[in-house]
Length: 310
Image 1 (cartoon, rainbow, N blue to C red):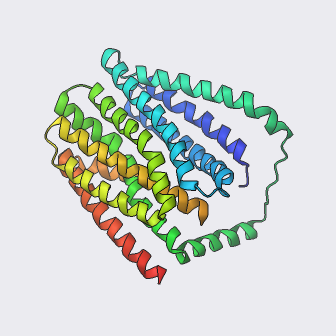
Image 2: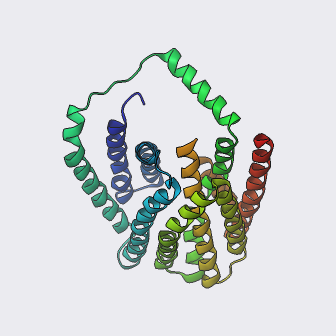
């Protein structure tokens, strides 16, 4: 990394601060969109750097998937609390209140990081190669390695499918749940329950992947994703929608630890597509489209994996 993991992490936190600041003070759609751009940019910076640091730490451990499960489980606890609190704050306050909470949390995280890491940053020498030819060679070698390695290839292929869900859920879930219950807290409750079940399932999913293989984990992911999305597509009651969301969350747990195992040992477009589809279809029909897309995408990914494995 040319800039250094620590500097990139601080940069991501600083950029991330703009999102709750702009969102909580938005006076028009354009300001909110700029805030979301800052959130995506900052989140991408933090995610990549954090994953790189985490993979460096666990790369020599035998139970990589299980450790990853515990890491994601901690995140699920935070997500559960955040979802419940966000729904309650928007119901009993205004839609701006959850963003105030996020702003405070970002400031606290930034301060803690600076207090704990800043002395270490000053002492740590930062070395970076500026040889553009070497960088270009390494980049092309990485691309070739990904296409030649069946595990990395299926990771790229299926990740394109699963990452679309991260953009789809924040758009479709609140719309669908509000139309069913007419309360914002119902969205927080569903996301909270999804986080709670993920918290318990992630370590179990990690052990399963460690004992079998990440491909088996992706196969379980495939089954849960397709079943849950078809269930959501035809959900006409809150309970059915909740069950579909929980099944989707279980699928995510297997996907997360499987991808972590593959990455350690060897987006944005979906949001635009979701918004466009909602102009012409109901939320149930858009869920159905994503269900078919997931079914076909994973099926093709497994077929290509088998062909490359030979």
